[in-house]
Length: 126
Image 1 (cartoon, helix red, strand yellow):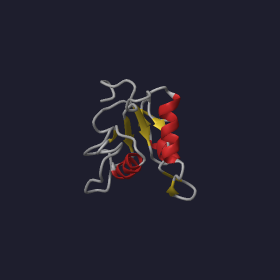
Image 2 (cartoon, rainbow, N blue to C red):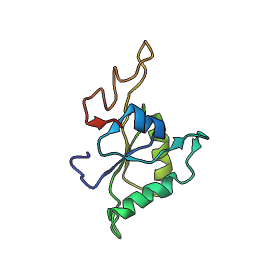
Image 3 (cartoon, one colour):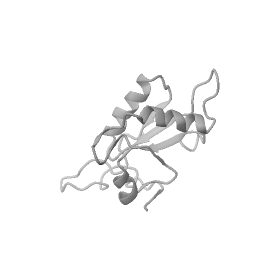
Image 4 (tube, one colour):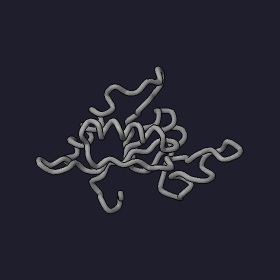
């Protein structure tokens, strides 16, 4: 989808520590859904996403905004964040079902059976 829609915005919604230290998809914009120190839902999340869309001239009058693709660790937070965007009227909202690291395996490890990194997609680390 990102290749077919170059105007799409890939948003990593994990915490700042996850984004910086675990790594993130190459080219992703960081807008946390829940972040330290309080670990509560970001009350400005929808507004920050709308700013991304308007700032890049990707919302044209009378037309739909560019697709927004959300990613978190395992796909659970991005699903919730996506629902908030849809409730606010955005139409082209998607999420990476397996997230960046995927679900836990039997040894409680991530990135072993699913996720962005497991699939060999481009990522970077700070």
